[in-house]
Length: 162
Length: 162
Image (cartoon, rainbow over all chains, first blue to last red; front, side, top):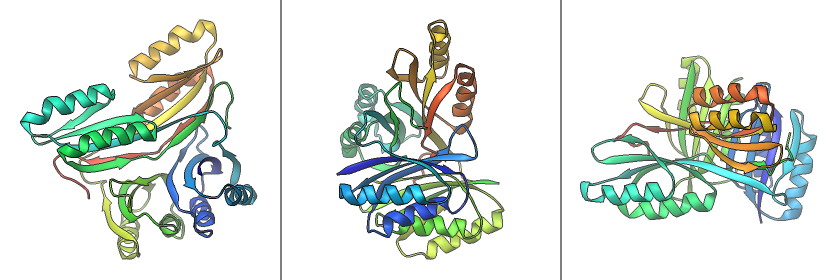
């Protein structure tokens, strides 16, 4: 099963390496990971998406809770939460394709953030399924490059994960 | 100086831990890191933002290039590139504050993605400065929670980092 884990950590070097090591030490691949500062620059939040046996993931979260520099671990999987990721996609556009690419951008409420004579760079946000759906529609035009953030998640209001 | 490094890696367990270890082993903190799959599910892209001495970062990128499972390392710092991050912000809104919060959301072309009687959850994208500017404006209302992806970057068209 796919799990989304949100972790508050001290913003110090070595923490990311230890957290990642805990997953890889058990043979778990991290599908996506984001880490960035919170409002308090001494604290960072990591959002990790991983896939695997529920019991082993429970063990990992327990071990994470014991690590120095880990403030709090939440497995958001079973909770109602909103998830989003950001993608930037550079796609080839010949003159005849422009109108069609623009209409895809419109439908997905995406934005064009850079233009060259032969390419558009598109920015879009959504859940994983929405981002993948747009990528599939753009593939036939030729995707030159893609950068994705991976998923962040926030519990549904009014509950706060902090 | 702040550096933005884009790394293509094999999507295998242990790679993230080794990359993070290379930075922390030299006492470098990672300000933000995103890792997610590319179009090829066997390949992931990491975007790392770190701050430090240019020469040492050059050494680190050289060492990264030598690691197994690292396909390619690009320091985008000196190149023209577009950078974006995604933030979700859960902010308190009393009845009298709603109009003001909504106008901030409009100005920043952000979106409200969840509502409860006492909170709005806002989604926004932009460069780090834009995200921070919005966060500063929302602080007086009371931010309950924030989740940020950290930065992704893509070279200006038509050049592709791949």
